[in-house]
Image (cartoon, rainbow, N blue to C red; front, top):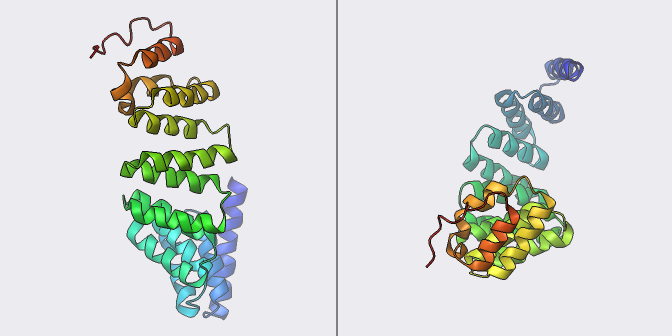
Length: 236
């Protein structure tokens, strides 16, 4: 780690020298920003990207990296604007659409996020993370069937994705489909038994089916040593 940091520091000094000689070299400003980003010097990186973009406004990767810096600074609305600039230049880059969607999701602008995920998936339909983000956006909107469809695509690409199984199970529970809920949770639990023990017990997504005997049997079978743990849920 020390060696890498030292190399980055030397790289910044190198670009500083280069910029003393040729201050309008957009590539040196851009490279300087990348090194500063790697050092965690976010404000300095932002200045470097801005300088690069003053000289070459159509440098799409500088707009994209600038957006990433703004995300790390918590300036999400500005990050979206930077991603928009990158996409005006390179609309065929699915990672730009995906990152834009992720930030829109964080801003709770779910419908816009879904539109960006859809555009990313037109370019690269085999990206499981994009399908996963799309599923979460639909979940947040309460469109559980659409969310299930997205999680099914995640599982097509990665059948061992325990979180996709779990989230799909949550959606089935919210739709009142106990059998499908149990099937999904069984897969999640088999893949990561320790992770989902308390989550399943406490997650409010399952509240409407907790009194169903099939779900109660699943919970007791999942944690038989906690006999009586679920008995505080009153029967309807």
